[in-house]
Length: 480
Ligand code: CS2
Image (tube, rainbow, N blue to C red; front, top):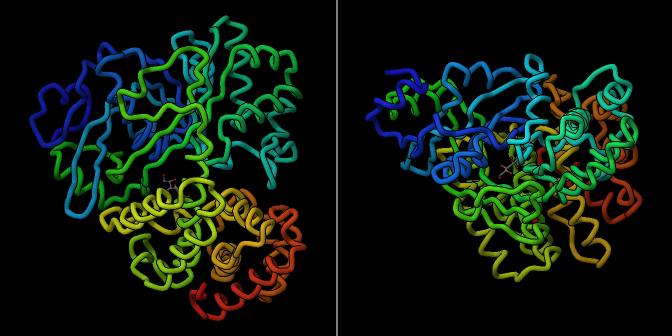
């Protein structure tokens, strides 16, 4: 086996597809913040296609929290293997679009310098829902968060809004010119939301910058989709066996991939269309469809499936009661909120059933279950609110909410860590309920800050309580 790097690239004759361009000609046009598995399975692959005809759009990757991607990709010259799997199919391709990976703890100055570089015309983000530091109920900057308080008072620079504001200030000062900030996270209105938290942060820390941002920075919305489980040691062995290369940081993903972007770029953009990206004037319908159908079903499956004892998405989808519940919920409670042709959405769901059933992916339910407080509002609570206001059913959606509550309670009882930015508050409420599920539901609805306007609604709290009691006493999936 040869190590994967620029040198072995030229002499390689194995099974993996290699970059179809000369990497030496590629320069960075994109600074990407949050270079995790998802970015490398999605945006970086579209850019890899684009580089064949436009070498000025290479990616400079930055990790904001962890050094592992930098440490793994440095000796590989940024190269990594993408394995696309479905059933027995396994296709491998070496992606060359990531030129270099920096990490915030080691390379903050280099990252800020990249913000100011006029060759960087897009700053893209996959920093997860919690990275945007929004208030629990919505899209404003949460100035009570310790990380935001620290950044605003100059004690630190760690939050995404803080880093964006510092980077944009540097660009303004050094005359780097207009730039696009492109959010690629699963948030409703991710572009405008990014623009809002950035402006709100700047309004407090550097009010002069706001007018410059208004004139020079665009924040297009985008919808991104590709199921990408965390890579396991077993995946690494299988992939390296196929390619004959030693890659310590490959990715496994599914054949399906979709990227829809609002065509609003302040400093030019690559010919995304040539790589299969859909450029549109309004991303909202795509975004709502994906968040509420795919991500909503994923979250319900993650909590309910874990409670029943499943580990992986495909395994939980084999449970007839669970998959029937999801289908009923999508058909009766989610599709009516979307205002798109019902047949089109039903076909989308059919495709999803096949994607969720992909057994070669090993997509762990507990990966999806993380950060529930950041995901539930747009995935389950928004459609619940809309349905309640027009008297449509919410039984399946409230089942998902109840499954989350019982799941966090169970993690606490079993002494397992709760990965969620609200873990401390939620744990305090769980302890206060002292094992009583009805009390816990009541406390979470009333005091977590996530259920504004919903907690006093009788129908809502009754359904969540009934489902939660059933789930916590081993009653399994409720019929809807
Ligand atoms: C998942 C998503 O972990 C999660 O919350 O729902 O990461 C999902 O796999 C992607 O959005 C698919 O595009």
